[in-house]
Image 1 (cartoon, protein in one colour):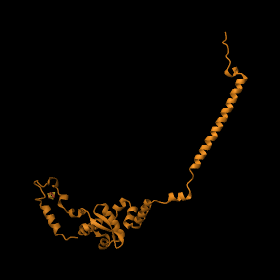
Image 2: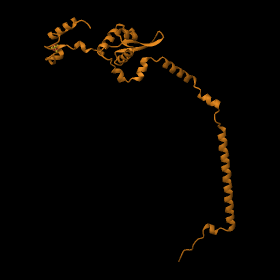
Image 3: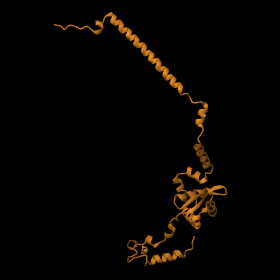
Length: 223
Ligand code: SF4
């Protein structure tokens, strides 16, 4: 036997009940509309409360603070007092500074000369312009040489104001080791160098070759 088909809820509702539901739906729709309008009004009034900044206020925010003004002033002064060497340091790479060469000039000899002269001024240092004059160098080459020697740790440079102009004082830091002083040493080609030691049978303390070489070296005129 087939099961009895049940009536759906709408089918079972009377016309009066259907009317009541339609009315309720209409009321709900109106309520939603009202709420929407209220919400729109609230958001538009909030936007009005935060007005756009006036031109005066905009100008006020763009004006730099005292701290910023001081910083700008310092940067301007720094730019005005910039030395030729500082400009070179900005333009050249470390490699370019360290590999600087002056055409047709023995750079090792020149470095030794610089050290000899600057070392005489000890910790007081000397004005770089005086040094360039003594070595007959242009300030272009001299400034590059000073940067190179500073990078090699041979001299230090101190920025000073001299007669209203910024320049540098050069101070010796260390003297470079010159290979020239040992280039004729007999030990470099000695056949028994491996067996030679201070306490051994073969020793520089008793070596005739060394004695002869030292005697020749100390009687050589200084370059
Ligand atoms: S000191 Fe004399 S023996 Fe020793 S390595 Fe030098 S030359 Fe040779």
